[in-house]
View 1 (cartoon, helix red, strand yellow):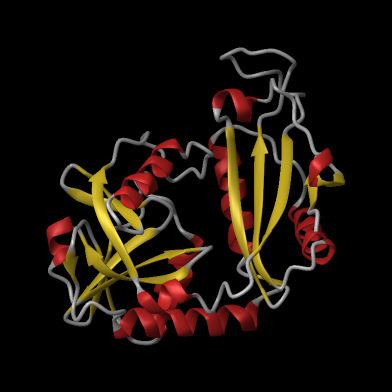
View 2: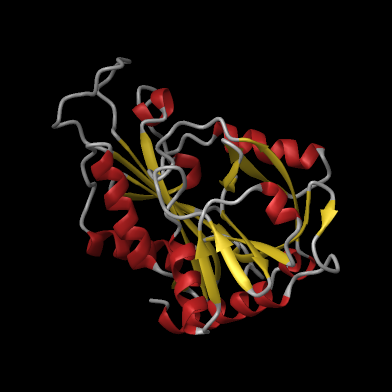
Length: 286
């Protein structure tokens, strides 16, 4: 089945969708994005993603392509047209194109480029990977300093995933100045003596929408939380660990740099939080 995608106001077969070769997203990575999960044909935490999208656009002085209500309608239309029950919707907004290449931003009346497409992923919630748990490696964090802005500058995270794959692992956690920042596409946590530890929000990490929801749910479940810097050595000595992201929800981590955590299987707190998150998110989906 050929996907229907959205490009600048039009719903098109993916084979007919085009963007200018002079688009700044292509030439300069001058673009932001969001990924929203779909469960049961409904959107998970759309409001959070819409708010973060606006923040990213504002931080880069980039124009909003449409209203939040219009954006919701586009998401829902793509779910319907592509018959998505479980999957993802990818949204990218670029500064657009003024018909040439220049480091200087184009004029303010240049229209942003807006692209959305779906990814059909049956079984997204009932993931075999989550039942097995992820193995991770640690790598140096050499990204730019504004990771709180969700830009499409994903070359190094992509390289990090390839480093993990070559090492026989599933993902990588990045380290800067001796402390873990985050995973290549997720926020990082470990659990020791019943306490959940994760890095506090700053420009150094993405302000994860799933992170915010999971920490709220953990607090409501009366679990102890510490938001502080932590080293990879601390994480290796943990009872368990996990990551959060919009595409994998709560993913247990069972091994770091070849060292098994606990008994080498997903820990009880990670499993509990995954269950709570999926249950609550389905109830609140729109």
